[in-house]
Length: 258
Image 1 (cartoon, rainbow, N blue to C red):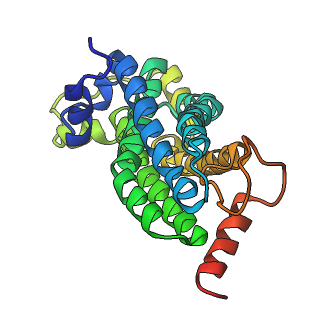
Image 2: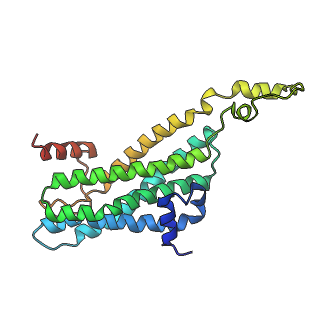
């Protein structure tokens, strides 16, 4: 199969490609997310390229390779915890299905931000406000992250544990004959099964999503700069100073003149 099959990407966006199809299409999804993330990285580097006096392509190339590393790195760090938590809460998804769901979510994220690349490029070429460009990119990545997490939830919903009264809902009227006797093993299994196993996975996945956001932002902070500041010389990485939250708050204050 062509690793850059348009049918795969289009099917994923339109919903005709389900989460169950993701494992067998993992190679294509991985290729698409790397390529699209690199496209968005090129858009990030346009600001420093247009706002600086010299024509230095290193700003664009630096962001182009960092975006795929950011997405893949965040997945590698957080995937083991997601798989273990789902197994503990009896979500009926295998290793390949969970990994395929994350690949699909990352591909949606990369597609969304890449589609916003022309907008980022337009404002990068027409504006010299570094705080504005920084906040705009945070908003774009936030939008892509929300839409990508929707795919994760769809994947989990396909394998979520059934409620205990699902069978009774299908056959609400019992038959006339006496029910079969319940064995001691079945009574013990019901007694020790936690009541949160049916619906508690939603809460734990919410906690995992928060951890995923923190991992992603921290890794982005380690890999910075993505948007080259025209007032600073080009560097591959910056030292350990400040934090992602501090930078966003400072940029918001500078943009609003607070």
